[in-house]
Length: 420
Image (cartoon, rainbow, N blue to C red; front, side, top):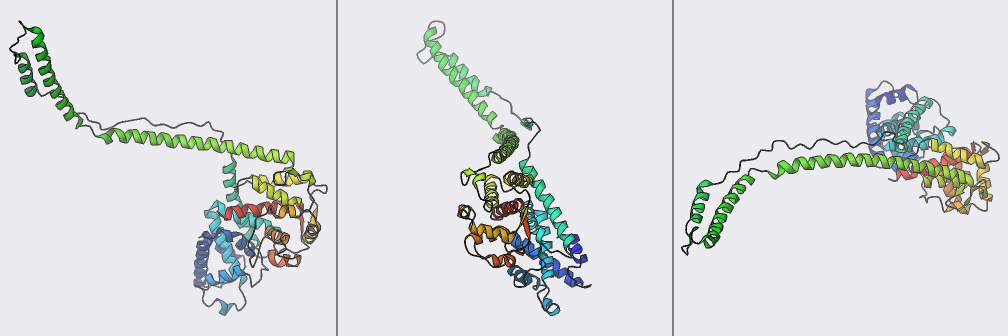
């Protein structure tokens, strides 16, 4: 595990374990166990990321209870020292587990980064702010590097790398006719035939006899010689080098085709997004975004963009979404309170247009992201009064329509990434 990050967590003053090496060891073991657990449950990464960033998370949060079960396997007297829920200890364990998992896997890094950056502007961070910034910076770089590789154009001309076809160690035996067998046959052929014909007085009759006997002797002699010669040849001595050569050829060809296809795909992705921005056309509703109401627009565009891109996308796609919304916005980058956004959404008669476009979610307890809350809200499963408790964001906190749409886009991407 990343002991440097754990030491930074302790130095931040987020929580105090004193000078006990045992407690440090218990925390390290807890982080290791949590990493193993999350590796098997990527769908939990968004929820754990949201909890880790919220200093005011409820003591009844299911994630904290799950983490405490892991920690108390090692630190058995935890509640003897901390009668109340030691949320900062558990958040510290989560932060370290997220850092370790994200450092190992760029997909995990992307899920953690996208989820966390959605909530970060509203997180009331204190002593842990620097370590959270370190987490987001490092995992963000990992995620972006991975995305750029996925979307990059291969400028180098593809070249097949072929080795030489060499057949080494091939030893051929010599071909030797068995003279002791061949000579008697030729002598027999030279004699008179059974009818007494000789080559002088009856050349035609004798010739047929000679040809038959001589051919038989020569053929048998050659057959035996070639049979012995073939025994000196090993099929594998020829097949193995040839198979190795063509296996290398196939590998080189596959690599070139893959890189060429990746470049074609990258061009196609860019062209598709530029066309989407240029036309301002919603492929899901089959109408112009100019015909869509303001409350529905950020939800629709975040959803539409999610449907048109791969799960791995560079940060530049976020800016494309923002710029596209700015084209349509009369009040550019103006912020609105969350409570006002939900009030306008409630009054919007066209909100049902996007309800069916968003994924279904299972209603669960505990922390959720803004997009999940919007989905539950549109399906009348939560009320506005539940917003702060479920998301950790105050109703009076403000957001621009562009940032809200990007947050929805992020959440939909993480849903796809974490379900694979």
